[in-house]
Amino acid sequence: MTGQLLVGVVLSAVAGGLGYWRRALTLGGFAGAMLVGTLTFGLGGWIWGLLLITFFVSSSLLSHYRRADKVPVADKFAKGNRRDLGQVLANGGAGAALAVAFAQYPEPLLFAAFLGVMAAVNADTWATELGVLSRVPPRLVTTNQEVPPGTSGGVTGLGTWASVAGALLIGTVATALTQVASLWNGNGWSLQAVSFPVLAVVGGLAGSLFDSLLGATVQGIYFCDSCGRETERTVHLCGRTTHLVRGWPWLNNDVVNLVASLVGGLTAAVLARLLWR
Image (tube, rainbow, N blue to C red; front, side):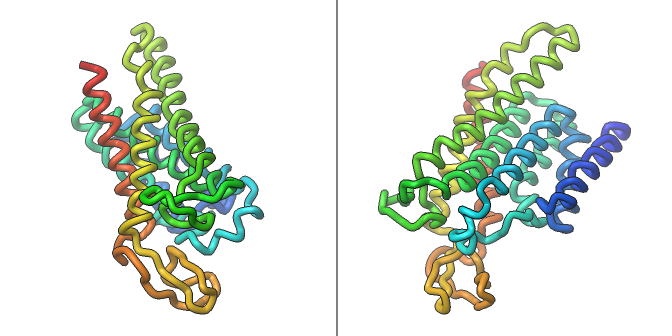
């Protein structure tokens, strides 16, 4: 176990260092990546760690995709393209906690929950990064009312399909890695792994849609009087302090992401229990 943790430290340092060098992480984000990566790699194992990397790499690439086209809505979001400590813990903290639990109790349902967590954060990130590029205006997930691009709780067809693709990527990678490990260990094909894409898509969609539901109802949303725009930021990009117009001030984007990841994990674990009985 000590050797595995050391490997986790080294791999996390390399991945986090590359992320910081590529300006995908802040210094705090690098520290968070070290913590989350070490626990996930070191206690969960290499499949867990590679799924975490799949999320980080794919979401980081999408954050830079057509960046210029996303500038008009950038001020609506709470954070920029560089992930800070809060974002890293919100997206990877639940998965790391599951890895700690798995090291003590190697229960397959814990891996199913981890799969759902990773699928949910990847689905939500893909939905956000690609959904804002939709030519069709988003609609609130609660009322179907048309809202401006970037509005919390707004969904588009493009964003929804992007969330499916993001979740499916996690499930597909999990299946491939598990089959390789099973064959390598001489255990033959894993029938359980065939269900991973289904668990990931269902869990990922559940988490992503719950994220939108919170954004449309109780997430803290602010207004900048100077610019006349809604935002998730307490201080707008113009430098002016904003004021709360709806939602709970403590329920910021990081907390929403964490809760959504837990919903994704719980959904995948419940579904796995039903499918694997």
